[in-house]
Amino acid sequence: MSKQQAKLEKLEKILGYSFKNKQLLEQALTHKSARMDYGDNERLEFLGDAVLQLVISDYIYKKYPKLPEGKLAKIRALLVSQPTLAEIARTLGLNDYLKVGKGEERTGAKERDSLLSDVYEAVLGAMYLEAGMEQVRMFILKHLPEWDKSQLPLIDAKSTLQEHLQQTSHTTPTYILAEEYGPDHDKSFVVEVIFQNEVLGRGVGKSKKEAAQNAAREALSKLDLH
Image (tube, rainbow, N blue to C red):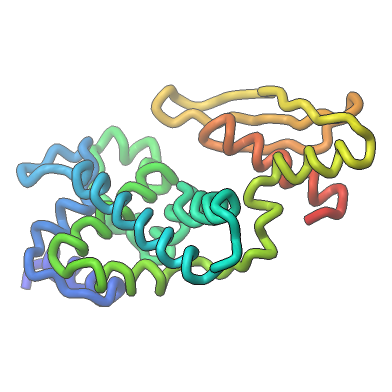
């Protein structure tokens, strides 16, 4: 057995599934920057994203039969968000198996949330193609992070904060972009939430929207509303 075969076998034990087509798994683990003959994981990631959305939608629809569509959508958004998927990928050790080009590797791409969430979805796509929906469904649900619907106010922290401040002072907060840094392909944004000339919270994210939600979460924590 070659070193690469042994490495893939170790990953398969972590995944709880042995691929018949090993090249399919290798493709799922390959970022386009690696330029391998067998291709990259973009198409598998596209497929895996769709499978994940369906499995999570079905799961929360049945788990919470009385929740309205809007709240179900917020829960799904949390469970399929880039940070959530990247953390699952790290737990599975996919960062150790992800193949990227030398330039990307030098910039620490293997620890980047965007690439880790993509490789997780690509593995789901590969597993779906070979083993079908039921195998993927069991795998996804097994690795879901622990949470419950009491966390709903934090899923959309901006709305929760705005509702609270409107009720207590009839005034809404404002959000400003305080800083952005990093190369164009991997920018980070820092957003501050301002209320009555005071910075209530400061958040960082890979998008302005994510940074604003994190700022609102910090504000809720400071106001003892977490």
